Length: 625
Image (cartoon, rainbow, N blue to C red):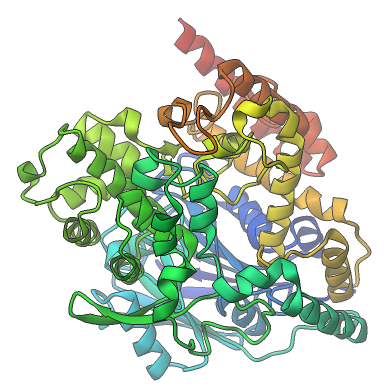
């Protein structure tokens, strides 16, 4: 008897041949990888070899629905997995709204898009049937237009993921936009879709997903929905979404303000971009913004006019912090407009704001004259200048051609500002400066995708100078496992499920009898596979598990005054070795050991792990000479 709670089906779409096929997913694979992130990475590891050009037809886009997505309260997450054109890393990026539940109700747990079309197309998945349709009339249009057109012409109840003009033009941090407001934001996966001439995917299904214990599951569902609908733990998210993150980060010395030069900013300045400053523009959202099954409904929905344009946007902390605080802009309307432009072009707000902030710092310090690039930009806080930069990046024109490559490559192309470029492994840092939290920089340094704030937080509120980072590494690793389980099952991290609740939901849905440690093993399998793949591609350890120079500079004011990301270099190296030890990786090279893979039940990857270790050893030896 197969595992319940899944369809056990994979949809494969080859754009080169215009062929589609449906494949069975083995129960053992589902049990080992759960769904979502872990399952997507496992398929990518087996199907796309290291060395693949991210923008070639050989790269693939894997869309994996969460293992209990569409079943549990607040379970709407899917994960896009591909090779990043920005970093060359195996990259995953999660996104919400309706795609994950609807692709499952259409009959599929995983969708793999491979090859490349000669002409623009979109894919329509409808209750088990799949069509590849022309997107000629959609090509050149931005995301808001695409979503409205497809929803009205194809299926008004469908979910739509699409790319804007930035994805078409292969901007290295172009993203995938879901239902016009959510995003699979990191790593440039929208450019991968653009390279395949894939404009959009439309998904709809209304089939029931079989559940092993429906009565017990429904009783638990009702209990958990009511609990988190009224819980104090979710009160701020229910009322304000994530917008008040700007207040927390600014008052703890973790803000990205002014390209991470001022991690502490005054409260009155931060509040301009908080819920307090943005709430006047809020309106009741359309149905696809607030799902009925979510007890928190944290998405804020705004509608306003700016720059002679009426628009709607769903702001989150990362958006407003990176497009606002990082660029020195604290005018709410302007920041919401920048958020709208980013979504419409299909640009990752984090990478976009980070890269522009870096450029503004060069301008401020007179290291570069923007007039040399035929643009007027005065520096931080220049609203008109930043709007123009967003447009140039989205269209890949002028200085936008260089800035569209991301902050690491842009600094190399211009031959300046590498010490001011805030990234890890080529992925621009998000809106949390780690100098305000002990051990958090280690999460950035070791994350499989590069700088991501969603790869584990240490369980502490200490500053880095309060003690050794080694002491919090175990809690960071544990939280990374937890977040991977959420991303694999399709759960939202803003619903603070306990381990016991997650296990019950999963067991009632699937009919299995697992505990939380069984689920956490899926995280360790995923991380180990991603690590091996990236090492074999020469884009990970031992040289790249590091942090940017700015985070070695002490904060100048605020509660974290005097704090660097770590006490010193020795403390960083000790924490790094501790993390490798916990994961069962080579103590110096950070590559999973063969015995670790055997313990995780993925001994079939042993040969690749040995090759990765040997490769790093040879490379290290060569560099020492």
